[in-house]
Length: 118
Image (cartoon, rainbow, N blue to C red; front, side, top):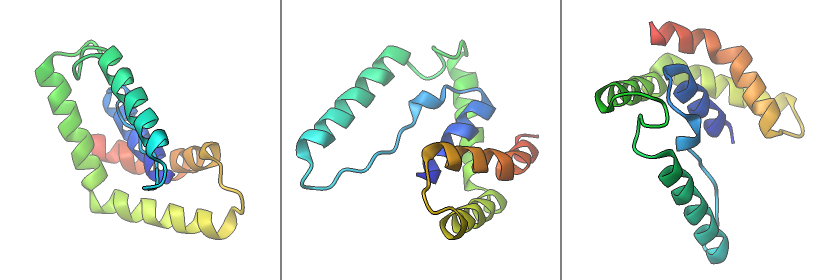
């Protein structure tokens, strides 16, 4: 799931805990799994506390950083770069692992993300 890797990288880059985001898939036939995923994520967020608390940020600074993260992932240049990365991965890497995806995102998109942070 490349979008997980991208969002977590951006959150880390802006100084927010990347554990505040998780994207998992569950089909309609996987009710118990869905409940488990939601319960685990809810518990994780409760343990982190309000946005900024785990990061040692004021609510205003945490909000500003979250808005910056949203602006970065909404940027056309980053979205196009991410699309190219995922297209390349699908063509060239037969067995995609989360580690491979994260490493490739790191290699190919760090420069773009850094330029958008400026």
